[in-house]
Image (tube, rainbow, N blue to C red; front, side):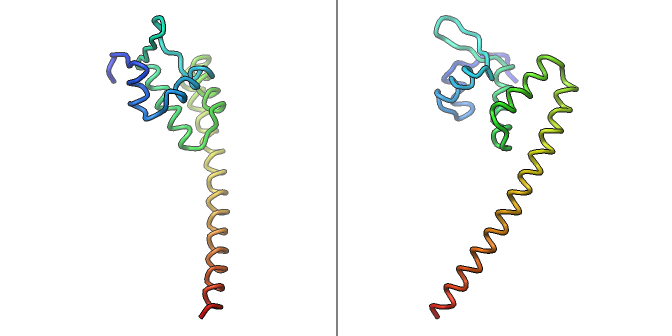
Length: 122
């Protein structure tokens, strides 16, 4: 990872996020760029945090869950953060499996209704 800081515009482009999203992540203290006047600089720490934030969102975690998880590292270190990650991942995997099951059932029900309707038309 490069030690060269990224500008606000570069950070938006790198992560394909809107300026509004990036500003919001700063507002809720997920990111803390270095500020020089009105210019913001994102160092490797912020780039790594943004990677984790977007990955967490992709997995379905709330921003508050992500914020709390990042805070564990700052306050307690790596091991407690990794322990918390395992707990979070286990909970999310269970929730996603329930959703997957519900979705499979819904798809099957819809397919039956669709097939019955198509059968009445023939």
